[in-house]
Length: 406
Image (cartoon, rainbow, N blue to C red; front, side, top):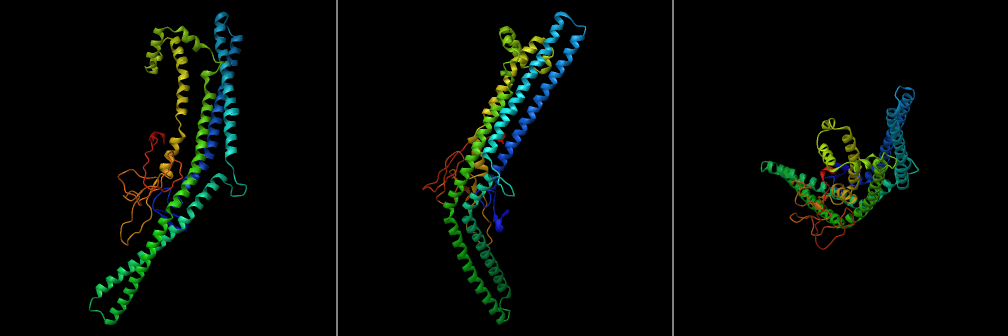
């Protein structure tokens, strides 16, 4: 059990509990940090490309100098030089990749971060985006939180009165007829006063619960509207990140580099059907088998399979789905979460739990479960929000992302 401001106890981590919107607020700060981390990822890869390019150039110069002064001659010397020229070509390619990563992809991400996230000018500095969102959630929750605290206070007063009454009843039973008349009268007066206090506090508690229940529709509507706004901001980030990762794929895709050797194109036309079948069989064998394959076949296989790496990467990026991710968030941290709405609790009774029959999602429940009220707010599919009461209860079957995605 966690505690929120003013010592208000909440029974679960459901979005609808007091203060539990903070995960959605933090997601804005996390988005800013993810921009920074993705820029760091790109910068580190760019440094690797730069270093590789420099090492290739250094290697080429070393062996060109050897060949210029060494004993090798004629056509064999030209064959040696061919590898240094290949290194020069690849060095230029990887230098170009480094430039694309920094000048295009990283610069695009940095510009978007600056345009979409804004820090407050006054200390303590924090993102205005998350501060504004938190203020909106607090405003939407304030009336509910105030009444909720009143319900908790009335509940404590009622249970305290019941406890006092129960204790006096036990004293009266223990005293029996053997006690002094004056003591019995004094105990009876205390018991009658306690009974009046129980009646009074029970009435106040029941009234507080009824008033809170009357605010539920406005509360869920207000919170859902703010949550929908947060979802749209996150959708923008998710869709932009998908585009950036696509651009990152394009920048790294060396198989499309025009200055790369044309051996793959030539090899494809030079290989006959039997050769391709042989290559296919090699691709299904262990890497150790490739060590015993003819050098031409090994080179050809690598040239043929290299584009597949980038095709697989592109398919992985394309599988990113903002709608699916937002639905997952709504179901696990947002307005599709189940909630146990406050209800009158008798003294000594076990408190209701979120997993009990009276709990349910604000968005509606599947048939077979009971709801706290006859009317449950419902919302649009896709993790959005904007819930309003309807005359009947609706159920929403939403596909959830697989566990592998999270």
